[in-house]
Image (cartoon, rainbow over all chains, first blue to last red; front, side):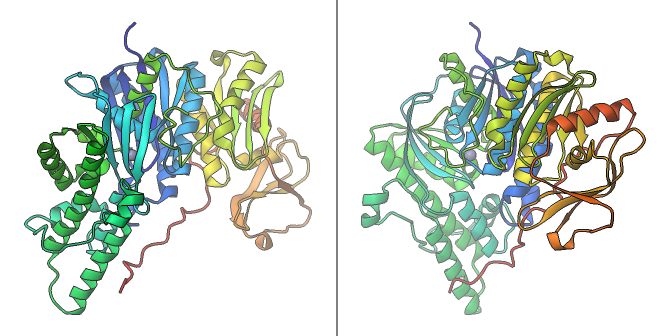
Length: 349
Length: 201
Ligand SMILES: [Zn+2]
């Protein structure tokens, strides 16, 4: 049997992602982002994102088919993100996927967005298989989650997640209070050039001994954001010039430090010498750099998919769908909905 | 033969034929759960009507007006079904289905939530028996609705895709043009522009 040809549809946040894979081979990864429309609001506006999905989905489908050089008839299955994510945005993809699958008489697989981020790793160019178990650190503007993946389609455990803001959200909010535009990640990166990451010791959320008992693998970034705001206000009130590069570098260091400290701890605690990164925050230079440093020091193999497969995309959803097809899983029934809080233990809805 | 989908109020799907009328339909008045039921409604209509997808000549999409989250489900489904089937999308104003078949001038309203209604004002049907929309669709507070003399009022809780499909067939026969391809939200997205960061200390 040749590897299944699967089309994936992803609309959980502000990217309309359509991907096409043949088993573990990437054929197309089309992403239409509404990021520019959100820029003037300083963050993702769910209704703006959902409207953009509705307009982008058919053109993105057509472009993906063109790029992959396949026709809809040739597909073996369709996969779609059914959660977690923004409800109104998810619904566009869910409805579109159902109608497309029915019109083509193809099986449909409703899959978990977070597990999809892990699934992106099967699309590695060297064609090597994903090595399991692995710890996965998934960080974006919508989620900050630490997973233990023993089996991509059977056994994923949520170790921890953010209890308030996502890390990407913290970047956006801090950028705004520093007077930098949206999205905050690349802006903070730019502002931090030449800054001293140790200049200001900003708090690392949920890392104190008493917090670790209950929240060993959970994250919190709202206290950090407030600490940066307070520091900046005091500086401005005193009339001193704001050391922008130091603030940006120190803030970024605090985020990267807490992300990697907890991820490495998870690797140690579970005896898993592998760490996989996913999500848009992986684009952040310091997060990648610190991950490489800490993993090397701890003897942990670090895997970072190419950036276009780290940010939200349809290829990772197609890849996870292809794993389900290859394993002989039954398609999802037609009555699944958009579940904004779908737990990672539900890999296929 | 047309597949018609409208989610401007509840969820409604139908397969209609110019000569044979409504071949199958599924309706839910539930103003939530559009995404859950849309797939099985389409599949059920195809099975019950016994038609092959290749027999369809197009896919009717109710473009609203309607509350946005639900409205998009039907439009998205109509668009991708049409893509998969290789058929055109036929966009229609959902309110027109409510006026289709009525003989008297009518003010049609549907729920827009947030204590507002969508409305359209229809004159008597034209010589071909098709609705004549004089004003709307538009958005208003109930107290601000027009109250012209001699108009009946229809406050509708549901929009029938079967009616919408039959109207599309009739409009096609009489060479009428269909609606535009944009969703009729009639409201801007809820966005409050940030006034800049608030002080924390
Ligand atoms: Zn994501």
